[in-house]
Length: 349
Ligand SMILES: [Zn+2]
Ligand SMILES: [Zn+2]
Image (cartoon, rainbow, N blue to C red; front, side, top):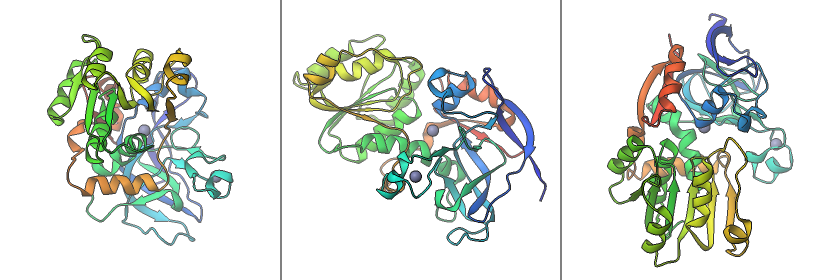
């Protein structure tokens, strides 16, 4: 096997990435080497590309970026028993230690010694990535690599939706980009009674409308979202707000449309501090706020599999564009244009 590969690297604090040749990772006895066949661009990759302060504190540089991917196992370490060459796997990007307080108490997602692919561990925007055996999600043989690549962002949406009870509830999803569309799909399948989707980008709105005919879509740039949602919910507001845009105005609205005792899941990453009226928005409302950062290991992955197995939601139309890794700049531009769903990168030459 060759010992060099192409990878997308964040070199220093300056904006941008570099597409360059680097060493193929060497695996330890508990590691697996995955040949990446498909990877997708996450909002956090766009933040990293622009060196946005909201994300840079998570990165140690230089670093191979990217954390949403799927590929074929090409080598396993001597101690690896559950994964073999040829398996199709997606890495869980939160690499957990297995022995800290959180890992011991079933909350590996918040591991105190966490390494994060594409941030402080080398990521998937490369021909190969190395991950511990314990961080591999094995797919059934024949699973498409593209579906495997979107398991991770699907998981973020599912974790955000199922952070608390959703059944029979009214739900407002802020931001109908890829994760917003996944969240609407998950909320619908897992039993939400009424779903509102809010989005300002016309193309995304049109895409989401086509995918989810039963959902009420609102363009808060043109319509009074708080009024529409309040009226449609008998003056109460929604039971659940799921915020994916990271936009300050949307985050503020997510609290304004919430009924008393409602729940907010915050997923989108704002690029600067956001002002909230704590009295009105949270305290007097007795609102419950959930920060969502990743997936519950491995509960969320099983829930994603269960969601897909229902056959009631096909996430594949959310993938709208595909680029070779070398064309990353075009791909990122497309991903942040508001005109695309999920944008895929192919590391193979
Ligand atoms: Zn992601
Ligand atoms: Zn740990």
